[in-house]
Image (cartoon, rainbow, N blue to C red):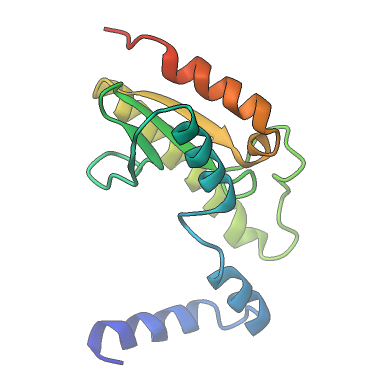
Length: 153
């Protein structure tokens, strides 16, 4: 380990010193992209004949799927991480609430800011929740409705 990486490791270890190692290991395995729900949305979009770009870092919020010719964007959000209102998966953590509740609130604020910025740039956005990817027929219908609508001017 060199310089920056050693510093980052030391900082993260001190920040999470009271978190059990098993929890740290479990959380480190949570993927940021190429999740099962995201892959499902990608597969269905592709089957419908749409082509897209992935994770464009030059756009606010680094959208999961970008349809440049349509000026449309899809975010695939995990129900827990982005606190899907009314969803059974969007539970409130029972431990370390002083850490988790503000973190989850920041996630929601960041999502809103990204979608708002994208709208200002002329993009139309759709959020697909993890729980919505379980019913493929409904997911397909939602994708068709969103992607076939004309771009607003």
